Length: 93
Image (cartoon, rainbow, N blue to C red; front, side, top):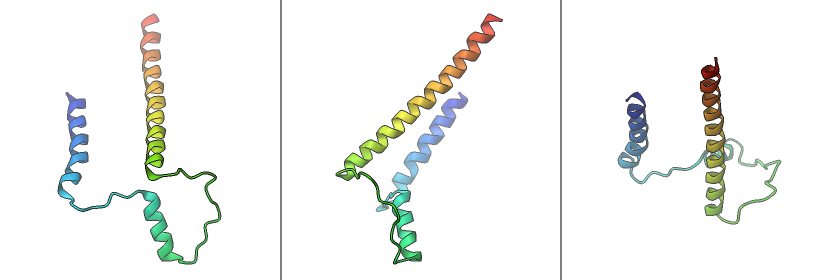
């Protein structure tokens, strides 16, 4: 019951801004940081460039999503392994 309320709260937090904020751009932190740097130091030259840049924004989003999914899988596995280990170690005793 408690997890269901928390899940519903997360869903509402996700949906409500999409409904009430119209014509808003949902940009990433990279774009905001670049904008802030340009305001503070317009002559700034980056000292490092990426080794490889994805050919399009869609591929970049795909790779970002894949990275997030792999991270979620690893975190879920570690949490599940820890819970199962605790459950079965207490069952032996």
